[in-house]
Length: 442
Image 1 (cartoon, rainbow, N blue to C red):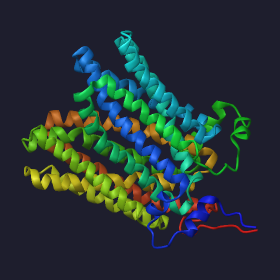
Image 2 (cartoon, helix red, strand yellow):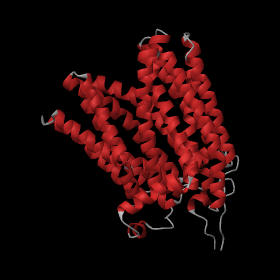
Image 3 (cartoon, rainbow, N blue to C red):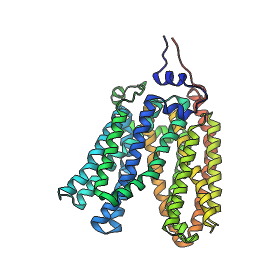
Image 4 (cartoon, rainbow, N blue to C red):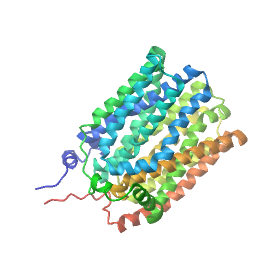
């Protein structure tokens, strides 16, 4: 009697010539997860644009719009360690379903209160803050659930497809939101946003995930919250230097990527003398590059650890030199081509990095590890935006872009250090490499 999982049975039935990404999309469970995430990401983009415009209409103040960004940033920074413990204790699918239902309700409250004449600015801020707290649970739960849905040798393709939903959301969501605001008003667009979260929850309900070796109830009974929290921190920072190196590489990537997206309009205005239309085209080029690379990555076989780190190294080197070259340009057409390349190199990093983490981290620690990475990425992103923004104001956008390029090149060097240490960690933990999936038969 075979112990092959339903996912593996479906995958074995597919032709070996089908790309890993298409193969995953044809499976019932990942296909439902992908559809739910695609809908949810479009809803997130709708929400982002509609909320900012709604607050600006209510207050006429740019600074009060900035408060939204602050309220959305605080929960991931402060609560992520505790959320990691909660995610490791709970069933991942249950967490994601309830988060989507909660987000639907919280978003729905805003236009309902507005219609009833009960929406004040403080109540709007409170709703946004609660929405940010709830949403902070979703990312670690999703990243932790992926290894329970797909095979180990499909992790990179799965992460690339999930990143593609974010890219598609960024491309489509603002356009839909802008048209909706013009036609029905920003408060009514939020009804559509609430519906996307509800659809995402309904897509997640039938998804089957493989049970953990250590059940959540057993994990909850194994120690106090502070002990579990420290166990996650020790795993990342003390016991396995390879994980800490990965975190450093991810922090450098987040610093550079967030700073670049923040600096792109400034560079376009200062170096290219671009207007709103040209800035929009540059944003589209960045998003298109990311989407193309995510789709291409999903079509590749995962390969071994060394091969995946080589891809990270090459992409960061290409991205670093492209940013350095961009800092010297004043021709919009060539700049657009380089932004397209940079978008592609930015999109390559995270799916591979998440896949490596999912491969080398014990399942019962995944929530805490991903939450710890989220803190590092969020903090470095804030440092990057503030630091390179200051550089742009004092020394010019071209100097800021040159500095961002140097950060990416340093990140490429750190990635080479990660490769050997992660390979040693896999061997020491006796984890089978991704290119050699093993199916047990009784």
